[in-house]
Amino acid sequence: MKNTKNLRAEYAFQVLIGLFIGALIGYFFPKFGMNLRPIGDMFIHLIKMIVVPIVFTTIVIGSSGSNGSLKKMGSLGIKTLMWFEFVTTLILGIGLVLVNLLQPGHGLNFSHLAKKDISQLNSSVTKVVDFKTMIVNIIPSNIVDAMGKGDLLAVIFFAILFGAAAGAVGKASEPALKFIDSVAKIMFKLTQIVMVTAPIGVLALMAASVGQYGIGLLIPMAKLIGVVYLGLAIVIFGLFPLLAWFLKIPYFKVFRMVWDLFLIALSTTSTETILPQLMERMEEFGCSKRVVSFVIPSGLSMNCDGSTLYLSVCSIFIAQAFGVPMTLGQQLIVMAVLVTTSKGIAAVPSGSLVVLLATASAVGLPAEGVAIIAGIDRVLDMARTACNTPGHCLASIVVSKWEKEFNPKELITTQKEEQGIHQA
Image 1 (spheres, one colour):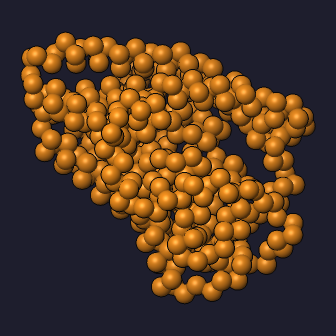
Image 2 (cartoon, rainbow, N blue to C red; image 1 turned 90 degrees about the horizontal axis):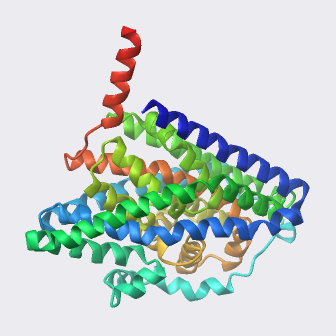
Image 3 (cartoon, one colour; image 1 turned 120 degrees about the vertical axis):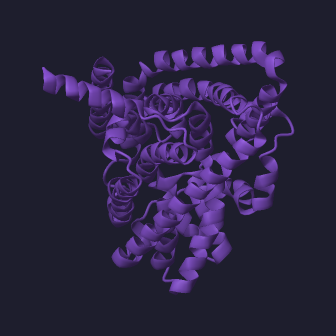
């Protein structure tokens, strides 16, 4: 265990160095930094090619362990959704308080603000506004097509049914389950091989981002960036530790365990890039495979804590920036809309911006405000994606405890090591 911790600390240090060097390259040599983006994109593609096989195989193994009981999987799903909604509501409240107290949208000069073409987002708006369609699409008409598109909610649905059916069949399904279990182990090993390249991928992505945006482009929107980052810091270092303390979870030990993954999510702006290792580490920590294989993949779409705060701040920011008066009641209506629309974030490209545009359209806010925010979205995306990492960890532990399937291996091992040190 000690060697593993040392290796993770060394790996986190390498990722941090990659972030720092990439930022320097992007700042001093912006054109060269932007030319490095294909290297970063290659790293993201390497991870994404692994995600669907890992999600499918781990969920099948986990749900088959329920002895084919859809009732047990249904109970797990309900508890998971209840936790997601509870945390989402708290985070929306934090965002609402901050944006009203600090008012980042007041006094802006629109002539100096960078705008981005958002016309391509309009085609995706209906996917998040039409909640009925989103629910229907969870059931895949073609599982191969759903896997090809990376539609994780559809893959999860099929995998649960497949695993439950395999468990109900009994011995006849053992050859198939052994094969799927073997595939899962191979994919996790492949993930370890691919993650060796993470510091290089992180360096390239950071260099490209800093080279593209620079510092001057961000200054006019510094107040909005500051409010979003402050809110995310409150969530990560305030709300999550408070909830963990109440539920007797060693939050900061967990956070240190995934610190390197937090940095990778920050630089790549994709939770998918850390999904395999995050699932593996939560199992090592003591969460059951059945819970982890359901909670974390479904959380990519249903538990986007960082995006939740971003959306609550940015929606009211648009109203402030364009002088649209909104009473507390109207703002609460916006939050209610976000509770629904934010659940489809991972299902569409540029999900957070699409949800923001959908919400703005639904409540009559100017779409131009979304175009302004899109100009700095990459900077906001880094922090909101990183925030999802501890959120997924906390959700896995909470639901595992709720299901009485939490065996804190990490804690037991650490306590034994500490006792050995004291005795020595």
